[in-house]
Amino acid sequence: MVEVTSQYKSLKKSLLLKFMVMVAVSLLISLMVYVIQYQIQKSSVTLLQDNTLLAAHNTLSRELGDVRKVVKLLVADDILKQSGESALLEHQIQTHFVNFGLAAENISQIRWLDSEGQERYRVNFKAGQAERVPTKQLQNKSSRYYFTEGMEHRKGEVYITPIDLNVERGAVVTPYEPTLRASYRTTSDDFILDGLVVVNFDLSKTLQQIKSLSTLQAQIQLINGEGYWLLHPHKDKEWGFMLEQPMLTLRNEDSSLWQVIAQLPKYQDLIASHSHATSFLKMTLGNNSANGTNDIIVLVKADDSVQNEIILRSFIIALACAISLILISGLYLKRSYRDQRKIIKARAHLEHEQQELLTANSKLQRYIKQQHQLQGELFEAKRMSSLGLMVSGVAHEMNTPLGGAAISLSNAQLINQQLKDKIDEGFTKQFLESSVEKVADNLRLSRVNLEKAIDHVKSFKEMAHDRSNDQYISFNIEKVIDDLLLGLKSRFKASKVTIETKIDVKKDIISRPGIISQVIESLIVNAISHAFDELDNKQIQLHVHLNQQGDLCISVSDNGCGIDDSLRSNLFDPFVTTSRNHGHTGLGLYLVHEWVTSVLNGKIQLVASKNLPEGIATQFKITLPRLKKNKIS
Image (cartoon, rainbow, N blue to C red):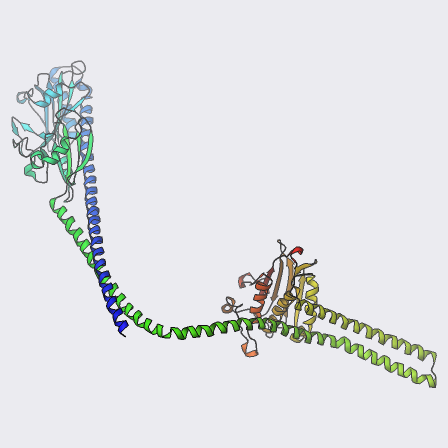
C-alpha cells in the first residue's frame, strides 16, 4: 500500500510538469495562429485593394482611351478641311461641333483656337443642351498651358492635359467640374484653320464612378504628379492646387509613402507597387513630361479602423485557440490521471496474480500438446473407421457370390450322392448324362461366384494397401475409384443413391492413392449422410480430369438440399455439423481439408451458390499439383 501511495505522488508531479509544457505549447501555437490569421486577413484586404485598384485603373484607362478616339473622330470630318463662304462655313462647323458634343455625354466644351490662341469657334454643353458662344464672347487662351503645350505637339497626335477644375474668366467654376482637356494640332495644309482643336471632358461622373468602388478596406485616392489629391475620402483635401492650398498634398501628410512613389521610374505607362499597407499604381495621361505633371497615381488604402479590427479579430481567434488547447490539455491530463490511478491499482492486482497465470499457462501448454496428439489420433481413427466401413461393405458384397458358390457346390454334392446311390441299383445312360451335365453346371456357377469373390478380395487388399501406404506412387485413378465404389456399393443401395462417374484421366498419375481414396470416400459419405431428405432422384456426380497445367482436378457434386449460407464461411472448421443429434462430430470435412492441404499439398473449395451448374445444390472442387516421376520418394 505504501508503494502504491508513492506511485500516486510521482504521477501527480509528472502530470503537473506535462500540464505546464502543454500550456507553453498551447501559447506558442496560439501565437502562430495569431500571426497566420493576421497574415490571412491582411492578405484578404490586400487582394481586395488590388482588385479595387485594377477596377479604378480600368475605368480611368477606358475614359482616356475614349478621349483619344473621340478627338480623332471629331477632327476627321471633312467639314473642317474644306473651304467655302465664311458665314456658311462657320455655321457648318458649329453645327458639326454641336451634333458631336450632344452625341458624347461627357463633353463639356469644344473649341477651335487659331495659332494666336484666339477662340474662333466654341460650343458649350451642359445638361444635354448645346450653347453656341457668340463671336463677341470668344476669349484668347494664348496664356493657358494647354494651348502652349498643345501647339508644340505634332499634327496627328492627341495631347491630353492634366486633370484640373474648369476655370472661366480666371475663377474656378462651382460646383466643381473636374475637367480633362484633349487637343489636336491642325495645320493649314490639311485644315481650314492653323491652330488647335480643344475638347473639354467633364470627369465628374467618371470620378464619382471610381469613388463608388471604395470600401472601408479599400479607399481610393487619385493624386496628380505633384502630389495633390484629385479624389480623397475627405472632400476637403481635394484640388489643393486649384484652391491655392499648397499644404494639401500627400508629400506633407505621408512623406515616406510619397518618397516611395516619387522614386518610381519615369516614362513608364503603368507601375504597380505596395507600401505601408497601401496598394498604388502610377499611370501617365499619354504625354510624358520630365517633371511628371502628367502622371496620375491611383492609391488604395484601408481605413485606420480596419487595421485595428484585423488585430482584434486575430487576437480573439488566437485567444480562443489558446483557451481551447489549455482546456483540452487539462481534460486529457485529468482523464490520464484517473486512468493511471486505475492502472497502478490494477498492476498491483496483476502482480499478485502473475504467478497463478504462469501456472495456468504451463497447464495450458500441456493441454495444447495433448490436443495435437489427439488430433493425430483422430486422423488415424477416421482412417480406421473408414476402413471398417469398407470391410463391412466388401463383406456385404462378397456374401452374394460366396452364397451362390455354396449353393452350387451343395447342389453338385446332392447330384453326386444320387449318382452313387444309383450305381448299386443301376441307372440308365440318360440319367448318367443328365447327372454329369448338372454337376458341370453347378461347378461352373461355383467358379463364377468364387472368381467374383476373389476380385472383391483383390480390390479390397489393394485399397487397404494404398491407405496404409503414405508414399507417393504411380497408380491408375480410375482403378482406385472403381475399388472405392465397389466397397461403397452397399451404402448406395441402402440409401437409394445413384452415383454418376466421369473419369477423363486414362494414364497413370503420381500421388498418394490411399489419401485420395479416403478424401473422395469422405465427401461421398458426407453427401449420403447430409444432402438428401426424401428426394426421389438422389444423385451424386464424381468428375476427375487434368487441367491445362496437368494438375489433377476432382469434383464431387450432389442434387441434395444444399448448404446454408451461414455455414459456408466456416464449413471446414472442426466440429461444424448440422447433425450433432445423430452422432456426427463435425470432423469429417475438417479432416478432408487437412488431408488435401497438409498431406497432398493441394487445395479444396466449396463452389459458391451463384456459380453452381444447373441441377446441382452442392459441389466440392479439389485441385492436386502434378508430381513428376523423379519426385517419387
